[in-house]
Image 1 (tube, helix red, strand yellow):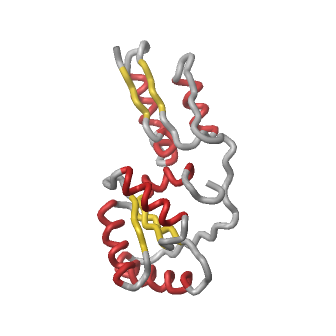
Image 2: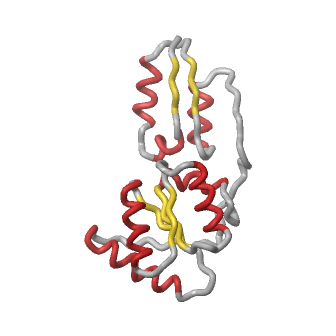
Length: 172
């Protein structure tokens, strides 16, 4: 029997891997078993499922009708690598001047999450971090501390952040 697992199918499609997925599907046995996971269920993922999954069972956790929280301010500042830490600290200074703000800083790697969290704390802010190397107990503690306002800054990898959509945040 042949198995194919497509984990994070939505991310693979977002990153442009549809041709590679199609090539793999064309090169494996037709009696394959395909398992597909996706944090979101956009039209592209639905189309892929319809095309490559036979008589499939769909299991949803949470609502398929989630929408973005429009009370969230997103700030994107394109800069050189050497400018990032200084710009982040300046931005945190501006943000922390407002009352009761919560800030999530998304970072690409687990190591960078830890480095940035330490840097933020050294500069006087209260920050916690979440990434794949943390135990479930640590993740729960961090998310509760952030949700309850005990910690105002959360630093997370983009992968760990995908779990925040079903987490303890307004609109999520």
